[in-house]
Length: 592
Image (cartoon, rainbow, N blue to C red; front, side):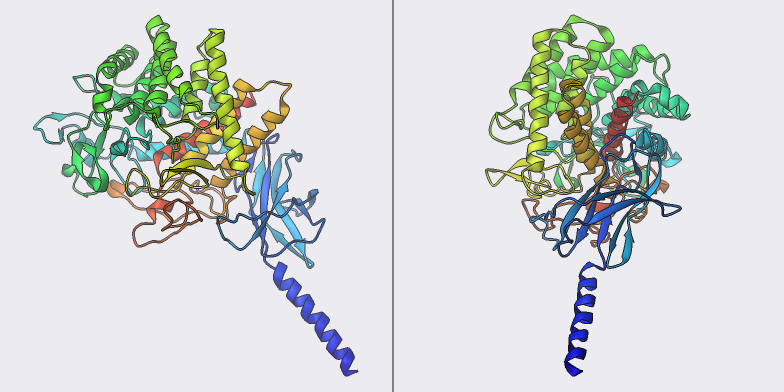
């Protein structure tokens, strides 16, 4: 009897140990939704292997009715992250019925649920674009304090004052206005205010029918015009753009100046924007919006004339404005966008030849490995915000180019770039499909998930949600160029890649954070800013990084609080929503 009791106790103990091992699986999922015909993947995280032939289900969120059942994928780990978990993909791409659902998993008689999500045609565009427009509207630098300060603002080191009213505050913690910052670092300059403007224009022109149906086209167009008018005010009487209106993080609006910027907020009089410092995308935006019949404070003719003046000026002075005196890949793709939009707007041979010149420059930077060279040496192009922009610039150029040899060269470059993106992402176990990259670290080319924290800026690294959305855009737009009906495998691979980047932003990440504010079940905390600005619905936070303290960006990190440095993860930044807008626009266009 005693022996029997011990055996029973052992069985009960093993049961509870087994239950403990599997009692708390985590289910990570896009907390907003999936397009009916898109790739749909959730991730299940557990500390020990699941049983062979474990299944997951898709259940109706309201009734709990099982709608779909499938086997989980094979166990994968991400060694670089050291999270102590195994991850299983729950792929339900074949399930297309519209509705509201949860992913469920039953272990030891207990059923676990994911956050809820929806499946619906064009869901991301339909449900998020109006909020993104709202976000930019709330980011307008249009409070009485800002307007009064900016209509008569000093140039750094000068007694000259100019009117640069308008534009958008850059981030939920920074009310400065940037064409681009980090110019001094040369290779990591992001596109900021001009990118937002171009993205809004692009959406308006790409899916106008849907925007009218959703009753948001007029408000989106107004936001694009707001951006165009600001850039016109930033176009100096000498035909260069003022790069930065800097607040010095001072609550006094009188402290604002037009500046150039070095590390640690050191300001200079080098405020003239080069192609790579926002001017290229500004020219592209003004040229593109000049074709609209409606305009703001400036006329359509003024938009186009301004774009032409700025372009001609930079053909002479661009190297002077580049901090190291040399053009690099960022000049190439930004100038390509500028020349392409001027070519489309004017149909002039001069701009055709200019666009081809910049396209050739960009094409010549493609390596046999499939990554672009940033410079004339061995530095791979990596970018925390605009990694997809070289491909997007080429796809935009190809919408105008008709010469077969030119089209072939650009298309082959896009093919190589996208093939590299897929290959570097999949050359390690990577269940979330997070877009990996190649970068130079201590003079050696290295692959990794996150950007190196030791880089040319000397201090700047942050979450990369803009980068992910830019690469999603590149995959979708590039896929339209390089695929055909006979190449469904490539289409499906690019679609899966793009959707996993967007899903990561929307909650399918190891922290289950939906970075699109006021969407999903879990967001970052609200962040306050000057003049009543701060976090807004439709804004996207920086996101997840490599481990703090790891110079090569290895490991993984996310912090809600970090003694004032939590901005690296939680701060909203205008390029994130701009690239997300481009990505969901491209997805919606696929369904026209």
